[in-house]
Length: 221
Image (cartoon, rainbow, N blue to C red; front, side):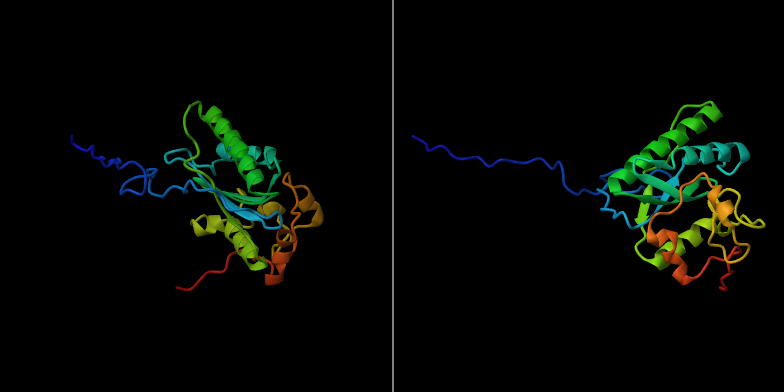
């Protein structure tokens, strides 16, 4: 009588890291990876970037900017996330926010993106995707990081070759009280439809590194 032999199990090659696997890139920029977002402390402001689909009308045109600005103002203080500063470019938006934690930030940004997408699609009389990807977020943990993020946000139009006199009209610069020249009065700052900073870092801590010049300093190559 023959003895039964144990056969080895053969496992399929499903799962694991494989070349070419994963979410595909959309456009020229890589997608924000779908990983669990790191914990966010209440005391740390966060720099958020929203990128929009290619081929859409510029967000800096008067009619589109009005829709985006109104959506930002309407969703600036919801779900524990607060938009304090913003800058609207042709195809992306920069925000400096405060949030109680990473979940509050995610809920606030999700609601904001829906609000912006609905407003723009209604304006353009279309259906379809408006935001190109997940939002990108970076916590700002030191006064120097916060100052750098504010200067980058408020001067972003200059970096993209758009020049004008004074603060960028498509940003929160008109209410910003940290300019080095032509300072904004307390009354002007209070006229902002956006909430005031509550964290020490975003409220005053960053000023330890100096106020921000109204006109960015040209860098010599």
